Length: 340
Image 1 (cartoon, rainbow, N blue to C red):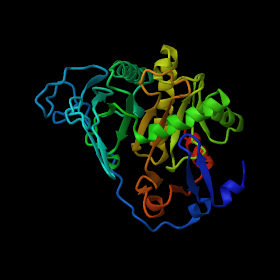
Image 2 (spheres, one colour; image 1 turned 45 degrees about the vertical axis):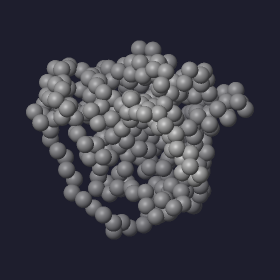
Image 3 (cartoon, rainbow, N blue to C red; image 1 turned 30 degrees about the vertical axis):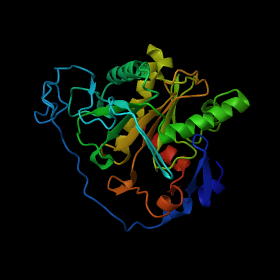
Image 4 (cartoon, rainbow, N blue to C red; image 1 turned 180 degrees about the horizontal axis):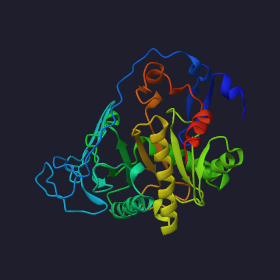
């Protein structure tokens, strides 16, 4: 391991976005006198009669959920994107805007209100993965949809309005900012090298083994070299695939295993149901080949030193660039040691 990276301030390049993160490993030694909060380990029932997402319950719009037994998908009752939004363009000097259409869905992972992905079986997580594949295909086949964003906000601290295990899918007519950056960087590398940017990076990580947390036959879980959040992770398929439709049934199960191993380790880190935002970045659904894409799933948890000490993006990070104290290598070892 490069000791300079563990002792001295430096910048690391995010090859997928072209942006830099400031790393200050010496600051991890400073005493903490910031915010502390009480830990709330809530015990939830398997069915909550007041939950809008539980099986058989009535949602706020008056529709009744079916008595689903595994995964349940429905169109979001409070969608951020409108499928029937009026088409318009504003081009008034420096005042520019354009309409954006889309379809938003909710994916209930399980009828059990008390569970998270970390508490579900690998086989049940696989059913969630199958639903992601189905929705990506169905939404992507819509000619007005050019990108499908699958994500989960877990925990109240991440803005999750309902503790029932669920995620969301927002699909839209244009590429969102983060995806556009990654599309540009991967396309540029593929054009120059005729190979996958993330695939070549993964080969280097597997050789060094400094930031690897877990791997199975088809997937690698690692802390990216350029990670911003203290315990940020990424799940990457070993085989280059533009999107999740490239997975066969066995690979879907191995992907589910990687999710299970990681989320269980997260919960052990501070002995709390670990909050995070996770999302899958994959090729657009714009009808192009997109052979430069290599899909991946990222987890961005906010916790820093304990269950009650969070990482905030403030000050320099708002006005300069992202910054972290604990290095990716130390974070990887910390999580790796929690895998059973």
